[in-house]
Image (cartoon, rainbow, N blue to C red; front, side, top):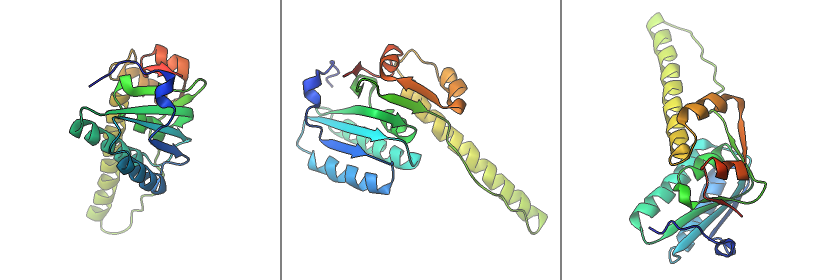
Length: 189
């Protein structure tokens, strides 16, 4: 697979243009555009987002990973514009580091997944224990999934997983030039 740095001209007509909340509507639009780009050797995915559903971002990312593995002669490249927050950073993490680009002034935002849940304990004690354990398992599994994404993001960079885990609870904002200096992306356009 070609991983050489791409000139700005390579991003003139992205195959996939996405903007807004990462949600089921974005996923449908993404799939439609991905299918329409089946004949392209260079598939640029351009995104601007303030975040959204991390599981939808993972679905899009898995589609990129799958297509990359199924068609190693094709190159799938990420171009972030203006804001790549939360779920957008999750999607970016599925692209190989040499295939990640941001426009000047773009900000990445990395944070922990959030949960809002009420656990109601009402009934036989064994049922109460099961409800508490189910909530705990949901949290533990979500942390594992989150940390897998953080690991993908920092692979091949100068950022350790420990640093991300330390900074993510406070919403870590990373400007494009800093992201390049840290080795999280290939280039800034």
